[in-house]
Image (cartoon, rainbow, N blue to C red; front, side, top):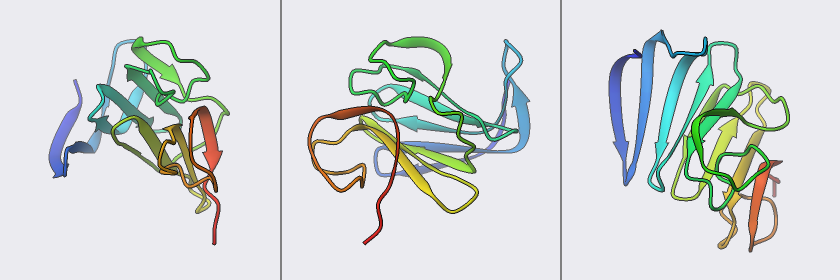
Length: 129
């Protein structure tokens, strides 16, 4: 079980941080978890790999599909993340080299990819000004 010592609430999104890593069956050790309002959860392992599970109608799991996952599925692209933030139907991650990536619902341009509309099922780099 995760050693969750801190629970923060930001609007409708819950973000869990662990002061010590916990273990999940299957051998994954998560450093942090984030819970989206649209019934999906994502975590960063102690090695920086991202995994998500739950509903996936807009590609918010980032695994390249629209399939609901009942157990952690690796986020596509083999990227390393320092942190993740899940929201309604999208997820964003901050890479250690100061690059942000987002995936999922982009109806209002919330992915920051320079366009709006549709969904993206894999991480895309957020564009700068």
